[in-house]
Length: 180
Picture 1: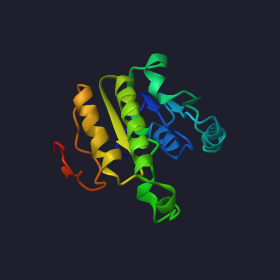
Picture 2: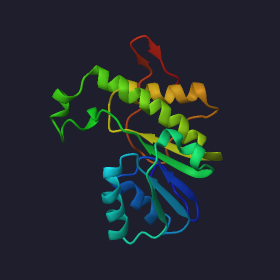
Picture 3: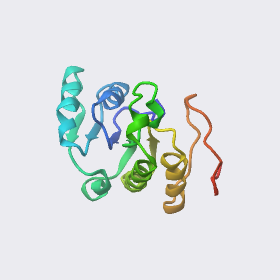
């Protein structure tokens, strides 16, 4: 919903598997335009393809590339969704094992990858294009810090969402200060 896809647009779902968001984007577009559903992990591609076929989606092309290299493969998208790979700290209530499987090093590794991916996602946009960055993490290092990194490394701005979701971002974290 936050991405706001329109009919006949060219859209990239940079980390698409297993396809729930991809297929919803296609439905909102009434199967018009084109959606590139990309996922880096080859083992996740069959589930992505299955869900696209199962739901009768006809405007979607599945690709298997490293999202960090995507601007060299294809760009000029109207919209890009980056639901970035993350530590999963925001879904502990669904998967309590995350508490014992993740540590601070995992969050730093995820944040590093997310920073690379968000710059690539921005570089895939047409001028004036819109990108949505999301994670299922509650870690500041994977959210506010990544957006702050993008703001400092690309000529972009944060838009207020058209949908009432989530909570306002953290403005202060340890020694870091984030722009509202």
